[in-house]
Length: 307
Ligand code: UTP
Image (cartoon, rainbow, N blue to C red; front, side, top):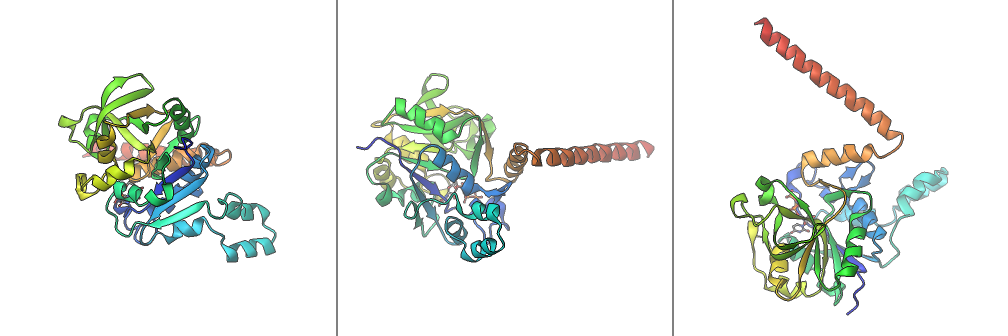
C-alpha cells in the first residue's frame, strides 16, 4: 500500500444551521476569515502539508465552493483589461491544477462519517487526510504538516488532531479513551462521540484534522447511525482500534471553532492581528470599542447610584 498521504477529503456537505440566516443560500465554508473563505484557509494548509489531490464532499447549495476553485472569467477578463495584476493574481494564481480538485455530492447530509464514506472510490487503497474547514488552526507551523511528520513515525495508524477541552464541552466532540499518554502523542483504546461530561472518558477531544487508513471505509459501511442520528466518523475509528491503532496528536497552535459565532469572530480578530497594516487599524478600533463599553458600564453604575 502506498503510505504517502497525497489526498485530502474536505467534508463540506453540512447544513451550517448555527449560522442561519447567513447559510441559507451560502455555504458555511465560504464565510471569510479576513479576506479568504474558511475552505481556502483549509486548502492552503493542505497544500503546505504536501497534499496533491483535493476531494470536496459537497451538498445542495454548495456551488459557491466549486466556483471558488475555478476561473471567474468575467471578473478575470475585466481585471485584465484594466491592468489590475495584483487582484488578478488573487483570483487565479493559487488554483489547483486541472483534475486535482474533485467534487462529490453527498446528496443527503447524513453525517460526517457518511460524507467521508462518499469519497471511498476516489481515495482508493491509500491513507488520506480529512480536514474540517470550520476548525481553523493558527500556529507556528500548519497543523496538517505537523501531523504528517508524526504520521511518518507511526505509519499505518489513524492519527487524530486533538486538544484538551473543558469537561462540560464534551457533548460537542469526539473524546478519546486514553490508554497511553506520551505528552504530545496519546494512544487511544477507544473513542466516544459527544459523551455527556459524567461519562466522558477524558477531556482530550478530536479537532477537525485526521490522517486515516482506507480500512475506515469498510467500517463506515458497517457503522449505523450514532449520536444525533448521523453516521459518525468517530464511531468508525473506534470500531477500527482493534486492528488499527488510533493516536491523538496535541498539535502546536491555537484552534478556532468557526462553526459557531463567537469562535468565528475570534478567528477573524486573531487573523487580522497577524496582517501588517491591518493589525494597527483593528487594534485601534478594538481599543475604542472596549473604552466605549467600559464607559457605558460607568454610566450605568452612576445612574444606579443616583437612584
Ligand atoms: P458540523 O457538526 O459542524 O455540522 O459538521 P454542520 O451541519 O456543518 O453545522 P451546524 O451544526 O448545523 O451549524 C462538521 C463538518 O462535517 C461536515 C460539515 O460540513 C462540517 O465541515 N458535514 C456534516 C458533512 O459534510 N456532511 C454531513 O452530513 C454533516
